[in-house]
Image 1 (cartoon, one colour):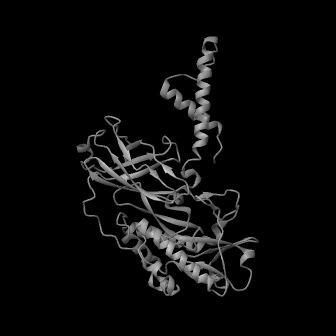
Image 2: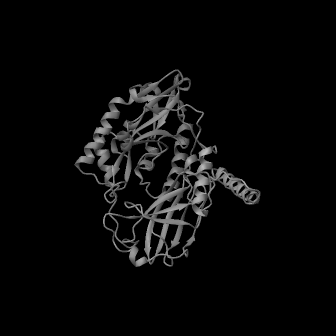
Image 3: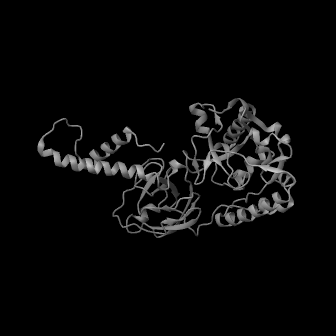
Length: 407
């Protein structure tokens, strides 16, 4: 993924030709062209080096993740709450693109007088970046409601290179003083809570929506379950995954895959590694990740956008580790003997065993779907969407053991 390939060179040549008007495809060679060509070669080599070293920066291509939330304050001022979920520091460049979703049109600024503050976001930290567009765009025009369209920003830390640019919705017709739709806080289901030790209830009863409160809750939860383990008569076995610190993927480590999806299926579901559920609660101990299969639920305002509903959570364990007495998995606050996990097994070979653990997170899919929609008012959950989600859930519930494989 990180290697510089020949096609990258072609892309650089194409972009250089577009921006300079220089034709690099000519086969003529004259002595008086030698210096300019050497100069171009040096520039090209520099570009290649910058591109190659760009992967050392914060990048989605290496698993770095962030959460963005933009609020329009009025008068051309935008504040963006940024949560850096990577072990790398993030430095936004003072650049942006203002785009329309449906038309794909970029709104060209009248000038480059856009000001940024708060562009540095530390690793595993959060911050607020403020952007002032008032001198660069026609703000009165932006504040007029759009018909069947909406705006979004593209932010970057490396000249909008793929993997180092991020989109963020922005609504200029609402500002921070506009009343927002009520959101139902997400808490663990009562039947699930009964299975969790009482000393851990505080974590699953609390709302983890706020990033700062969530960070504090996770710290307290880690302290609580560490103390629980110290007094526990048994050995807790951690799951395995290819996720490295900084949310990077170790491509040399085997991990479960789902058999190839059709084009239609790939538009309805995603498969990603996550350490938390939709309520931002840790699935196991800190640092463990599950392969999560999620269903796409369309948004009310944006026809081509969706929010992902996590359906199934696959935790993988080394078979040798769990083939002993008095060994337990720690799943969603619950200590469970591996002997009791057999009904949830969806894959097994000589080395690994995979368990699908959603029954330890939610008990009824219909209630789970409605609760999720209640905490995400932007979702368009009509009869058709609901049935589609149910069909997707039922299909994977019945066929998951036949779809999983290790390459």
